[in-house]
Length: 376
Image (cartoon, rainbow, N blue to C red; front, side):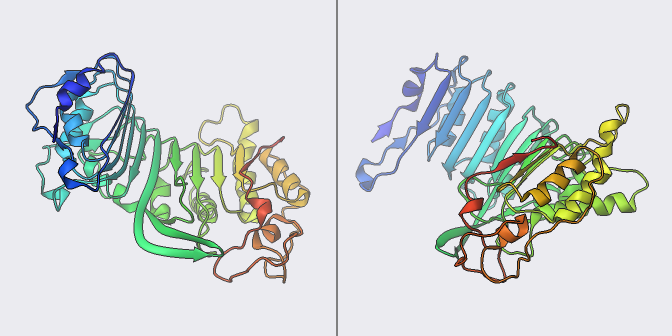
């Protein structure tokens, strides 16, 4: 059976949002096959959002011309050629948001396909991409990208933590640095928001964050997932990298000078965070100081104990608290979870399973993130 996609798509010429999905059937005789591409294109001038799923994606990108498209999302597509995707993005001059999830090329090696002679600048401001889809956009130059959401790659390994079983996912940051040259700007050059908290993924492994931090000169917000291993706490890595650069540099704010908000699924080391606040946040009283911004918002798994929270908020105001140290229960003390000890609370679940390799967590810290500012 053959589907005349041209005739079907023509019906939606006045649509503003379009969802196209080709599902698989167990009966191969009833499996629909797309008609060969004839070169005809369909003008969908009203279309603002396009969602493609399955094996029809390459056909749809070939046929559809939507000059006013703002958002493109492609999921579970194994038949897209990089040239087809690049050509579609080039034709969609108003495209601002691109989401590529589980997208790959039918060629064995994307690098073997025909490539453009030079990088092509695009006006995208929001990019969500899995690791395997990154090669699909290697010819694009994201000079104005403001939001980057990295969804990583499944490792084919099932992990267990307590009662949870989940597929291990890894987020690679180094590949985004390989193309940086003096002529080609970094994808991170104008980035405002770096989001590493993969939706519906537990404990993704993030590699290369320490290499990326020096390039985040415009970043205002970052989200960091909970680490599987207690030695790989990302928020501590971020804070310590910034503190180290401030100590080694003659000027304040060499790394992440515009950082204003940190979302973390792990609790940070409070003394290091306080040091960072005491270095950065006095700029609140220097209105003419344009080099560094104050860190004004933290999003944590739960509110820490007042003995930690109150000095932290004083430091967020750019003032020195009575004492920089905090009193919290020792994480190695018997009974209770590590997160309660780190946040200064007495744990109500004394039978929480503890593992020296990972941070344990009780229900207190699973009700959603809380927002902490200098006054709330």
